[in-house]
Image (cartoon, rainbow, N blue to C red; front, side, top):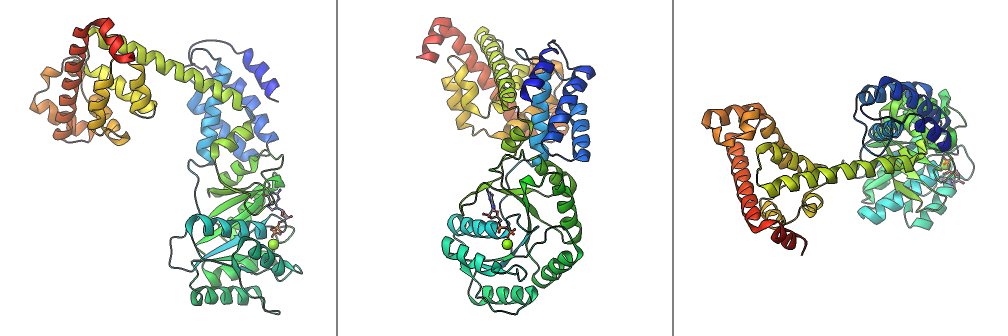
Length: 440
Ligand code: GDP
Ligand code: MG
């Protein structure tokens, strides 16, 4: 597949902005890749349209071709849709916090209950009680008990003849009396969605008011995952999804479809049969897996990095010449932000050690950088070139325009002055001195 995509994209070699044709050609193949990865058709359509909108007109980076550029946009959009951060189990409630495990038979609910219990016990030092509400499958309750012993987590004593709701009530009561932080309720599944199953879990839900209702879905389920997720979400209500058997060869496209139809986050991944085979959900990893084009993505990232470095070097040259206006400061701020902080950018500039310390002392963080950017953006061209014209009324206007205060504007102007001053001194040291100082 990757090879086929590569061929198509090689034919697209061109420079400049991405045209609609470039994007359409690349997206035809992306659509196939997504369908092959078990992403449901409506999700594929919505996805492809979203990418098209943002891709057409984007500049193609040097060193890569338009198709590769589209893949990177596709990848980033995929990551975004899959959920940007990995979300942990929500335990934000008075203990014992009920966690309801939902899903079809064999999806991995019981195993995942034990895995989550172990994770909460180890990572968050929580006291967890597990209860099996599966009265349908013979020995289901024993299965959980054995797993509980294996992970060192308590299970509710088995009382034969009770209904799932009776067991659930007893579990919460025991959770209260025993001082447990979390009560995991492992429900019975069915081979397919049916009304009896839905009635049963709704009744359990109403009796226990779970804080988390986690839908456990086998990654191999493919397209059916959408039906399962839709039904559970609409009829019972879910708060998150756990995808199991991601250690198999399923590409995980179901994650995107389920996210698309339910809007609920994928919280965790089951990556094996062992009780510690549970991982936080990393959208970029799954995105790479769904697309199967990780090498293209890293190629484009590298190209973007090179361009950042070239910009930095250009700026360094300008600094050495001594002319440093607010536009230069703006592009510097953006670079710093893009490169994830002070270290990356400053390391590239010769002789910048002192300023680096100065800025570090000024306690620069992401939020401040954004604010500073906004301030400069609210200035006219003339003001940026020639900050001397910034009188009080101009500063008031800029503060208003950038949603900051006059004090913020003053601070930025002062900082620019300090930097320009420093540049002048550096220039006096001369090119050779600079290099020695910076690189030595
Ligand atoms: P339940 O019917 O939903 O409770 O499913 P079980 O927890 O009993 O799991 C069914 C089978 O799937 C068991 O053999 C588990 O060991 C296996 N299983 C569960 N999660 C995973 C996983 O992430 N990877 C693999 N390879 N197997 C899993
Ligand atoms: Mg089970």
